[in-house]
Image (cartoon, rainbow, N blue to C red; front, side, top):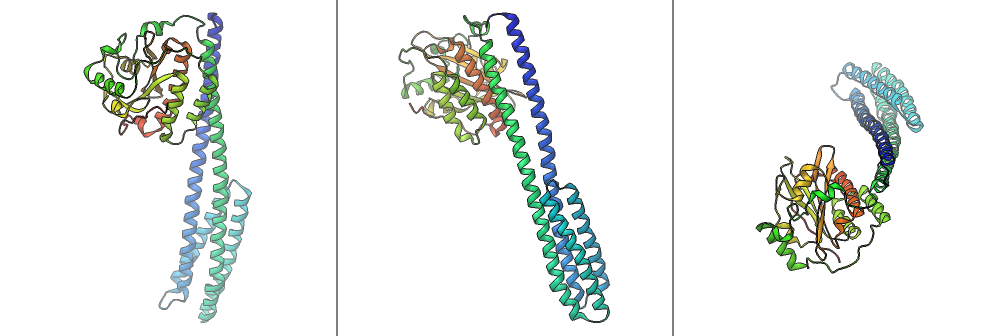
Length: 410
């Protein structure tokens, strides 16, 4: 797409669509927060009502206990029964499903019957008939309190299931909005890619790979410590790839990878995702660098395609270092490092979150893939999806525990 006016119109419409998606997600988050709060209040109120029923049972049984003041315990029963009835009324007013209303209506009816049984037990004690009072308390009264507790539990389960279902539907809608936004981003990115030539950013950046290349530098320009790490890599796998012809980036596979990244539930799955990304980008290796909490240093967190000893020897990389990895982190812009035929180049994509740059994804590509606009665009898309995972995980706080590396499966 070459016409500037059309490109600008597409970009404006894209921003409007993203704004609408952001508003939809914000609205859903507010609703989910309200439902979670209501769910917590309901659980707390039913627990308090259950405790009140237990206290009520003990207080009524004290009527016929030796040496107890019936007047004192009768006042406690009156107060406790009223508290249970009030709790039932409040729960019914907040109930969201018919099953909860029905169970609470039954609990209220049981409590009314309990009040009559309690009155008869007091009358029996007043005419010096403790055996009749005991029969009423330990038979009818106890059974009614158990029934009231059971109805409260039924109401709790029905309400909780309804709120959980509503939260699940809201999460599904939120995921659909986010995936739709991701797909739209991919489409618009491809539409806005120049049809030929290099962009200014790509031509002038002279950026750098995750092994610490300086802008415009060749691999021979690595400093001693990073050179040692590269030597370890050379001991395990050849640096110079076999000559080959690049294939176009598979957009369907890219979309599937981004979808799977959005659904990832365990960081243990990340190495396999990096392996898929490496295949998509024809990359010999990928390193995720994550910022520390202060944002001063980058640490290698997860890698694919390099021996474990090479990654472990990289250590910290300061944000002011004179290489493209640090440059991508400081600027928040994609960087590339060029290569000659038969050598590997690099594409460095920043992991951008709401709080700023969280780290970078350094991709070492074969067959001069860094010159391919599609490779750069897809690397940026994958990095954007990785950023959402980093910001949601403990590692997003910038404190990856120990560097990890995963050998390429081949």
